[in-house]
Image (cartoon, rainbow, N blue to C red):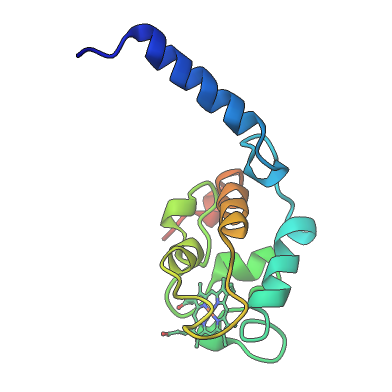
Length: 129
Ligand code: HEC
């Protein structure tokens, strides 16, 4: 049986309508702000180990500059490329916070963080060496 063009178009339209009903964080055009949207997540779930008191893996997550500098491995984020960002990779594989630590990062928060990174302008200084 062949899929009719109408069915395909219908599915696309339906997908579009569903996407239109998603919360703000999941809309492609909703740009996240570091201090307003991202830092509050980090404060609750990451800064205990990557902030003022501790810098596990030498990573400080309190500022954009520090995230771009990153920790012992590499920059934590790559502007414009969430997929190649270490921070996202570790969250995606549920490796951060370290196993058994709570609270974990939710799917919605991960989606917000991905969009935040993908929406960042790519500046020469932020490109990997
Ligand atoms: C309980 C302490 C703890 C918490 C909470 C924690 N981390 Fe970590 N993080 C670590 C430790 C320890 C390492 C080093 C792990 C290793 O080398 O195997 C690390 C490493 C990392 C690295 C790699 C840095 C590098 O360059 O090697 C990233 C990125 C990271 N954490 C992100 C996060 C994020 C994002 C959160 C919050 C969602 C978070 N961490 C919460 C302890 C923590």
